[in-house]
Structure formats: C-alpha cells, structure tokens
Image (cartoon, rainbow, N blue to C red; front, top):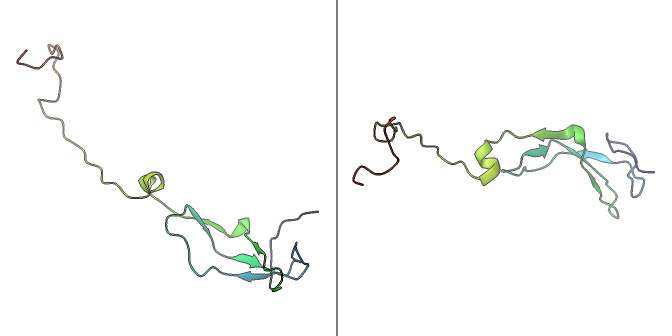
Length: 96
C-alpha cells in the first residue's frame, strides 16, 4: 500500500529506512514553481527522493516570460488622424 511522504522520519517506501529532510542547492530560473525542501532516503542502496506538496512554492513570472521564455517589450502606438477612419471613408487609398 502506497502512502504519502510528508515528514522526516517516515520509513522509505523503497527500503524502510527513515527519510531525512534536505534543502535544494539551487532552483531553476524559468520554472513556475520550486520546492523549499524535499525528503531523501539516506540508505546508499536506495537514495530515493520524495517531493512534498507542502514544500512547493509558486514563482512569480510575467505572463510573457511564461509563454515565450523571455520578456518582450510592448509598444503602444498613439492614434493619429491618419489612422482613425472617418464616416465617409470607403476603405480605399485617397489616390484611387
């Protein structure tokens, strides 16, 4: 029967050795989430890692960086009289 690993000292699901709590050395830069800590089996023959949902931290990313992987500048063009259509415009250039 499988059970969730939630705290240090629980028996490992693979070998039964009590797991220990560890902190990651580095985080991924463009990831939407990371883990503040994880559980690891200290048995050299097992070495299983267990990622705990309570340790999951959401990273704040810009919407553009999530979709494209980079931040894109946004340019807003002001409306000029040439770009605003009038009521008598037939949609054709003025020289036709």
